[in-house]
Amino acid sequence: MKLIAANSNRRLSNAISKHLSTPLAKADIRNFKDGEVSVEIQENVRGEDVFVIQSTSFPANEHLMELLITIDALTRASASRITAVIPYFGYARQDRKAGPRTPISAKLVANLITTAGADRVLTVDLHTGQIQGFFDIPTDNLYAVKEFEKRVREIHNGQLSNLMIVSPDVGGVARARALAKRLDDRPLAIVDKRREGPGKSEVMNIIGEVQDRDCLIFDDIVDSGGTLCNAAQALLDKGASSVSACITHGVLSDNAAARVMKSDALKRLIITDSIEAPDDVAACPKIEQVSIATLLAEAIRRIANEESVSSLFD
Image 1 (tube, rainbow, N blue to C red):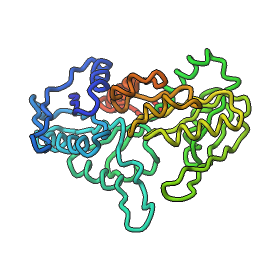
Image 2 (cartoon, rainbow, N blue to C red; image 1 turned 120 degrees about the vertical axis):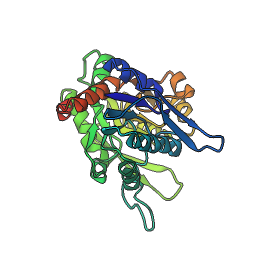
Image 3 (tube, rainbow, N blue to C red; image 1 turned 135 degrees about the vertical axis):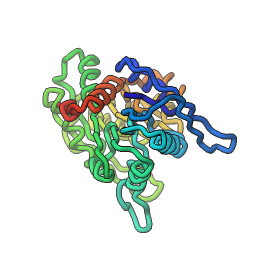
């Protein structure tokens, strides 16, 4: 087995390497002065089972090209099997035609990864489950819910009687219900989001009784943080005692860390290290990370040993 880390998330790659007691293979992945990606695998991979670790986070296009070109280099170097380990799968939000003359970019990216030569994909908390079907190769979608469950129990010292799980929209109900079930079948509320028009703020309605509850919003992606902070305020306005959030992928663009910090409604934001935290996110006292390195390392080990991955979901 060989592990290769591209440049998007070296910290997570090093943590996975440590868990597996397998050093990262030597590879030179850099840019020419015009931005063109150059890849050189600096050790023999012929006949090897190779795992390429790369999130397609900011800058998304550059990191995607690094992944594609690395996979191509490994294919031409005669690797026996190539698994693209993508902790955060970018372009996942473009998973359907949202309007006329718009692309399905998630499908396009899936085709590119397959065409580049990947034999398998390993990812975490896809935006929608249907994206698995966009790949014509085996795709394992892991869930970070166990890591969040552990941290939530620690924060509440095991006292969960006042906790309520909140889905930020109707589409995320199944995801939120999974966490609620693991946390001793806590009750569930839903934020009903509606836009008054293009560029106008969202109207928030709360489905469920949140009065005097400690609310925990659970979702897969937080980008600018505006919707999250608005949802937290809406919950407080409905009488919630406190509002925190567990969100797998902390994209946190456009000064999102500052927005979270300034929010009086949002008490705490917990994200995973699927995306390497920039300095402003790492320095924000309201934002903390839980690691998915152990989860990914165990999945990689099982794939390499031809063992079941689905049992990790239990």
